[in-house]
Length: 422
Ligand SMILES: Nc1ncnc2c1ncn2[C@@H]1O[C@H](COP(=O)(O)OP(=O)(O)OP(=O)(O)O)[C@@H](O)[C@H]1O
Ligand SMILES: [Mg+2]
Image 1: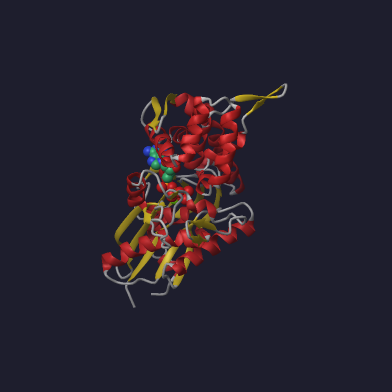
Image 2: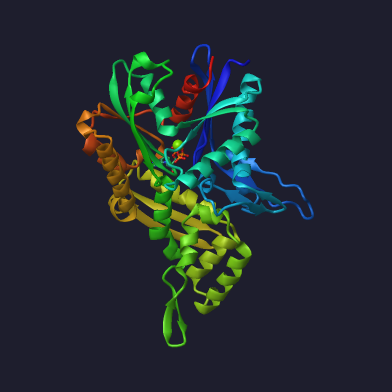
């Protein structure tokens, strides 16, 4: 039997795999990769479908001049009961098949590193995949299926923020009441937990978990909001045309579709293109509407969202940034200030996360003052208005952060003691 077990954090944006040596309980290595898949357009008459994952997916997608199917935020598909499969060129893929591609990629990286075929892993899951328990279960079942398809035999699930708590626990020297806030691309998850350095190897931790909860809002939503507020105008939102005596706006649905990756992932491009042609004509071939046609025809969704994410990430450091885009005839530049971003663009979502957290603490019968440390992890924990309300609620000294992209995978690996007998 191998002494290694994996901790696997399949994230909306980033995924990670940690290899733990169970004899020393030390992490040997963590690999990180973006949760992206690119299926290049097959050569004519070819029936085989190949794909690339992570950084290579981006490189190949760009090198192929954006031909093919580029997929992002696949985790968001897991709880969708309406999603059964998608056809990618010649092959049909279920949700678990898509997830399996990423898991297999991670497993191969780790297996190659230790030169073994590891069959045991602790997988992370958000506290809520979905508010509806049936959909929530569906998501975990699909993740389980994906893990089996990827070659795992013994699989356990752990809540992502509890995993992050275990990572933080290794850095403390006394007992602490800790709120873990794992703010990712898809969800904002919270766990309230008693941590203690003396508990590092304990198997029974149930009574230490005071509460856990989460809300289905994350950094992806902020990207969508930037697209809606600052991008869609340049793709023709608000354009009108005459229908007899009435002035009618072009359908909002076009713009709702291009603000969300879930929808972009599964564009029915033929139907969409004929609808686009119709409104192109009706709006008198307006250059802004032409941008929308170019976006869809040239498959530019990912590159637009890259510019959006770049602007968002810069706003974690700067007061004012530019959301710039120039490609395939589309060209615009929108300035975004941190005030506008914090209030108008993402203010509502930030308020929802804050309100959720306050309600969560209330339900856990815990006042902010009773919390020794707030351990923030995940990429979205760097977003300024989020950091600000956390500091306002808990005080500057209480709010700490660790490795935003590896804490969960490492903690999942540390969790092996809870699930697997030595
Ligand atoms: N410096 C930064 N400032 C603001 N946002 C950032 C920064 N770095 C990354 N992000 C955002 O963080 C998110 C990714 O975070 P993370 O990798 O923790 O998510 P994930 O684990 O993939 O998602 P989830 O846990 O929700 O499934 C993305 O929305 C990304 O744009
Ligand atoms: Mg995460």
